[in-house]
Image 1 (cartoon, rainbow, N blue to C red):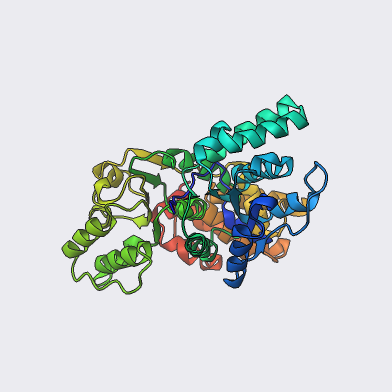
Image 2 (image 1 turned 120 degrees about the vertical axis):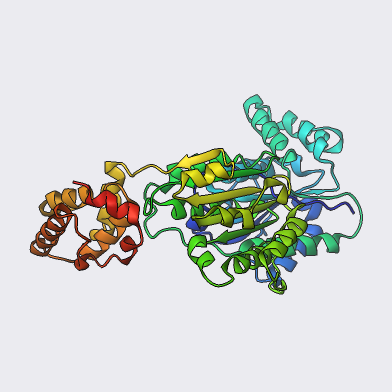
Length: 453
């Protein structure tokens, strides 16, 4: 048995998987006459016993058109497993399933895991040997050049996926257990809470995602730069949810600047990094920073990892946690969120995304969702809403907290609160207590910005 697995590369879509309402964990696509009563049936039973919600089509397929129920099942599945056997391409139904699965991979960030079952991936991509004969036979029956070309392109795409398993001969039960183990890790992994109202996140995540270039095999450090409250951490969390499954290990270290101030804070961060990426809570204490550096370099130098360092404010934090690209394996990505441009320059981070302020439409929508639970204010609150948005200056944290504070208040209360805030702002004094925005006091740059006349 030859068994290989690496994660397949994702599309550039920025919708993170946890935002979809999945109805199934796994969709199985297979040629019934080849594998229903052996490999596929055994795989389904093993997934089911593990508590993994798996869709399998139990009905004999009649007609040429794929059923709407199957299309819906594909759309609602977090993962599709393609069991590509020698007669897979003899079925227009299977090939239409394949088209739909690849569409969902591109638009819904669905994970696609191919199993090359006693066929060579190159035979699938070039439609040769037994696999090609089955496909040619179908072409004689279909007589539709456009459809045949779409199927050819899809088969080429799936044969080029960098991830999957190839079973040539050997123990099928071992491969099934390997697949079940990997799928269990994928469906049970933790997703980070991004935002209650993810307004404006998608285009910003797209920008960062393009800098990451996940498909390339180099090692990259990418900086997310901006003042406090502008959404750096939110973007980083969304990126983590979007791409973490494509790496051998991943870790999101939050509030690094604050943690590093504590006693043995940097050592604790090193230990957390190692235990999360290696998925081993038994990682022994590294003892001191220098030993921690050596352990990270030794244990992770051959692993393709995703590491997000959030809230970095001192160069020593980077030198301790990700001192150089060669600490990590090929294809690794390190994302750093910070307010300090000079810090990124000193660490030779050239790929930097400066987070943009929200435009007026985004600000209006985010504020309104928090203040009214709708995307726009009613007419009698419109003018006051514009005042509040003006004070927030396009900062998501301020828009969210200010909108939440004003939710359910009367027009009189709104006007009184905004007048009071305006008076405080003009006097350039500290923000008044009615705002109840504790986080603001921690964001000096944000306070300065709001208090400028």
